[in-house]
Each structure stands twice: as structure tokens, then as C-alpha cells.
Amino acid sequence: MESSACIGRCVELGPDNIAFNINILSSFEQGMEINYISKLMEMQLPKIGIGISMYESTIEKNIAERTYYYPLIDYDFIPTYPEGGFDVLIYEHQWDIDWEPTGFFDSSHIPPFGENYVQYSNPYYDQMLTNLLLSKTLEEKSEALKWIQTFLYEDLPSISIVYPRKLLALNNHVLGGDGFLVDLSQSRTEFWDSNDQKIVYCQPEKYKERNCFNLESSFNEKWISSVYGSLYQRSQVNHTYEPIIASNYSISDDGFNVTVFINPEARFSNGDPVLTEDIEYSYQLYLIEEVNSKKRRFIRDYLRYNNSIEIISYDTIVFHFNRQNYFPEKLLSLGLIDKSTVEPLILTHGYNVLFETPFSGNVSNELITSCGPFIVDHFSEDGKNIGLIPNPNWIGKSPSLNQLNFTQVTSSDDAIAGLIHGDFDIMDTNYEANLYMYL
Image 1: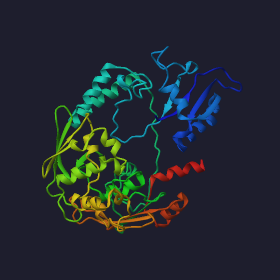
Image 2: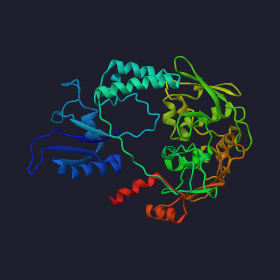
Image 3: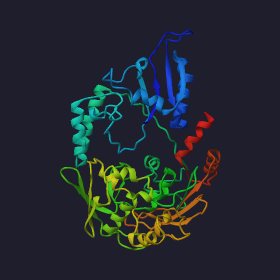
Image 4: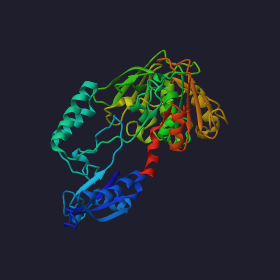
């Protein structure tokens, strides 16, 4: 559950120009940002005449009882705050532009069966949501989304407050960077450029994940998306998906089967052709429980078992979904590896090789051999520095940079100073977390 604050009913007029009072329940389990926002509400709301009768930073369970696990005995709806429910619920969601609205406002997800906390129920909305899930073209998706947006604008089951959360800082000689894709960690770094054809990217955390399979954080996803090629990837500027290793795909009428055709020119950085057996093996690794991939939960929403992927020929593969996916390209945008080099390593040494540092131990560079625009030139044992150089076998636009380096700089002050002095070229958006220390 992603609720950040549960605000109680106005109870009485207060002194000193306070128009009314409210109670605030906030979850301290949701992290620093949620606690900061709820604490800010406690300090600032009285300045505009809203008093705080009670402020409690509590465990998630105490909020869940009012929003999700409330008893459906005396009410067929979520009751008011004095009656055990809530009057206003503020909750945070983070998503990229592939947001799937299933579960938020459809009738079948009213609690306790889902997270439709506002209990919105509109059969026309439900039908348009079904149409969206069955859409096969961008035009069909756009039409269904237009109607969904119309219903939500008209009925206002909830009020969305959207605000910019991140700040990307870069020197003015850096060209070709798409800030939106950088924030999503889906940058098309082959479009990046600078005066000296070199960019140093700094961010506050170490590079703890060693490849696309043990990827956990956005810090690592930035270099990983530059090295690991995928069937589809977002394009610059308009951010729609475009084929990279794939040449095209088709989707069945019921939306459950996606057939992908591989670009015959696609090559791994070692020169091996990208075959459907490499696609199948890569996705099987994501699905294997022992690999413990962060992507596994997302993939299993659509591909329940390894036999959900069927090889038709050396350049044609079918993904059999267990439910409709109106953005199949997102599922087709995962990093790929060369089966012929990785499978023998795992058979000999087990899945532990997935956690070894590149160029060390048993793994050498096989697990970072992929089909993206860059290859790894060096990877420091302490996880503080990664250097990339262009992939000579990349089939897309040739990278404009000769060198792309990622480095850890823990202090935001040091990062800013380095940016000013020219030691770094780009300062990561994740430094914004440190800004709370100064507010």
C-alpha cells in the first residue's frame, strides 16, 4: 500500500483564526520523503487556518485498517474518520509513462479486493479499461485512454497533484541528453555528446549491481541501459518505443500472444549474432527464483512460467501472456545476454556468478557482453567507478562519445563543486534525496 497520510474529519473551530482542525496519521514506514511531507503539513497548515488536533507518525497497519482492511459489516463503503475510515486520503504513486491504470479506479478493485480506495464505480470506465487492455495499436490505445481521461476529468474520483521531484544538472557543453529518459534510467546514451567526446556522470551511491539480472536500483540502471541491448527501447524526444534488436512484433486478437521478429543484423559485442535462443534464455534467467531478479515480479505478471516463451525459428519468438498487457513493449525492453557464453558459466559455477564483479573471479566479461551501444571498459572492485566505450558491433546510431564514465560522489556539495570546476559533466537527479537535509 502506498498511502502517505490519512486526514481525519474537521472537528471544531480553533482559536487564533483557525477555521477548523484535522487529525493526521502518517506512515513512518514509507521513508524519509513521506515523513517530511506529513511533518511539513503539520507545520504549514496552521498558517492558512487549518489546525492540527493530532499528529501521529504510526505503522502502516494503523492506516491500512482505515483504508484497506476496514470491516464491510455496517458499511458498503469506506466510512468517515470518526466511524473508522477516513475523510481525505493522500497517497503517493510513482510510475513512468507506461502506467497501467488497472486496479486504481475499476469497480472490481474496490477494497478489500484492490486499491480503489475512493470506491469509484463507472461501467463505462470499466469498459474503456477493457478496451485499452485489448488494444493492439497506438491509435487504439490513444482512443481508449482519451475516454478514460474524459471520465476521470468529469467524475474526479480523486485529485492528482503532480509536481517535479528531480533536478538534473549538467554542463552546457553536454548535448543530446533527454532529461526525462535520464530520470527514468532509460537514457539513449548513444545520442549524448560533448566537446571532448567524453562525459563523466556522478551520482551518490556505489554501483553495487554487476549486471542486468541483479539490478536493484536506478543508480545502476543508467549504465546498464547503455550496455545491455533490448528488443525495444524508448526513442529520444517523443519517448515512444522503437525496435532495437527486434525488427517488429505483432499481437494476437485476444492480446495474449506477442510474436517478435529479430533484426537479422543484430550482434552482441563479441560478434555473435543475436538469436531467439538468446532471447529465451535471457528471459528465463529473469524468471528463475534463485536469480532473485528485481524484474521477476513484473515479468511474472504476464509470463508465469519459462514455457511461456516459444521459439518459432532462429529469428521469430512468441511470448504467451497469462493476461493482457497494453504496453507489451515495456516487457520487451529488458536487457539481453549471449546464451553461448553465459550458460556454461552458470552450469559450472552456479548462479553466484551473477553477483561477481566484472573482469574478476569466474565471470571475466561474459555477463556484461550484450548488444547495447556501449561496452564496459573497466569496473572498479569497490563499485565507485565504471568506464564505458563504444560497442563496435552496435547496429544503431554510432555513439558520439569515445568514453562514458560513471563515478560515485557521495556529497551533493562535492558533486556541485565538481560540476562547476568541470570534473563532472552531469549530476544525477538522485541527489535530491540529500536536499531534505537542508530544508
